View (spheres, rainbow, N blue to C red):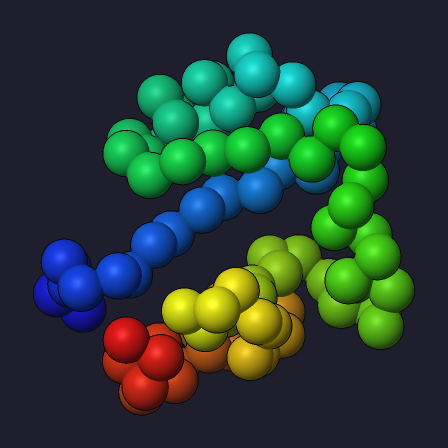
Length: 90
């Protein structure tokens, strides 16, 4: 998918580190370095994502938000959100 400069934002939310401890800033930096990420990486150090994931979602977990920051799509598993769903929100 081509990068869109019209509002597309990707954020990675880390819920834990490799040892299943609460994620912190160092884990976010390690993730960015390991995967070459240039988008924001945020540590969920207070467990906010669990409130959304209580519906039985697994990892990787994806959430699409519209321009008003309203959750449009929740899904888990690689390839669970299509390019068409992403483009529709742009």
